[in-house]
Structures are given as structure tokens and as C-alpha cells.
Length: 208
Image (tube, rainbow, N blue to C red; front, side, top):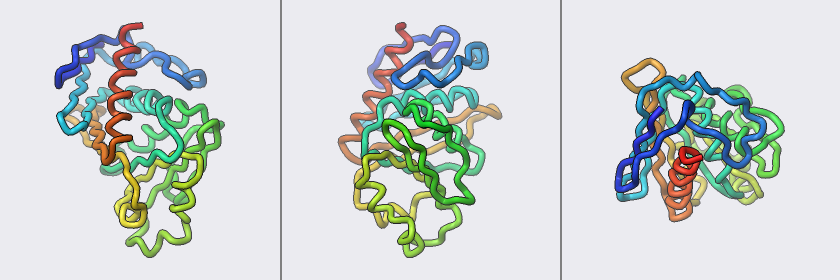
């Protein structure tokens, strides 16, 4: 599989899989042979936005694994995209990359799941909420102050409550059935740095 990085970075290739082992990868089984053979493109834009084309669900999950090894306490991610576009699968990868004690599942009926680990992860799905007034029982401000990271699906109401920098991650379907375009839009210097580390880590994996 070939990964091409645009926006001034050089291209690089993954030998047989999108990713190998980043930090915190110990609990994830290798998925060689499941990645397909089509080129995957990583595009870096001048404003710090990064766009990544995922060819199949395994790549989407493993992208989360790499990001999970980068996260720090207080990191906040808003995930957007239609149902079935890969948001929860991506969060499952995060919990693997963060060495959480269990893997993420869809939190739709619970609203909030906490996954314990060296760096805990709160995974929220606010699909059923209609406005910011319904967020008070969730105590989002306390979560953001805790030594944890947050990944929030359908999080528009929360943006009005949490006055903090964040990363917007948008999932869009591609032309092929399993293809996804995943766009990382940073709001704040910390998240521009995360995008830099993410693309840097992908390149390191390709060179091993």
C-alpha cells in the first residue's frame, strides 16, 4: 500500500498495512492482508488541517490507534459525520492506542462511557440531545478539567458550553463503499501540533 503526503511533505509507503506499532499498540492484533492495495492519500493544508483517505474500516480503526498514542490530558475531539461513517470505530482505535482496559463501543444509549487506562478517555454521543441546556447533568466542565481526553460525537451543543480549544474530526463517505475521507480541523495551537505529530508518526511507521 502506498501513502502519498501532499502539502510539501514527501511521499512514503506502508509495507502491507496502513500502520505498524505506535506507542500503546501492544493490545491490537496485527491486521496485515486486510488493508487492500489502493493508494491512500494524506493531505496537509496551510491552515493546519489534515485530510486522510481511509480505504477500509481496519485503516480507520488503526488511524485511531496512532492518534491514541499522541493524546494528552485535556485533549478534546468533536467527531462529526453521518451514522455508520466510522466515528465509533475510530474511537475504538483510540482506546487501543491509549492502552485502555476495554475497547470502545457505541455509547448512544448511555450518552457517556469512560474507558480507564494510563490516560482515561471519555466517549460521549450526544445524538439524542436537542440543546446545551440538556448537558448540565453530564458535568462536561469537570470532565475537561480531569486528567483525561474526550471524544464527543454529535457534539454541537457541547461547543457552546466548553470554552476550550478542540479538534474537529469529520468523517465522510468516499466513492467506494468502505472508503472514508477523514478531516482533522484544529482549533488551537495544541491541535495543530497534534496534526503535525500525527503525520510525523505515520511517516515514521512507513520507514520502519
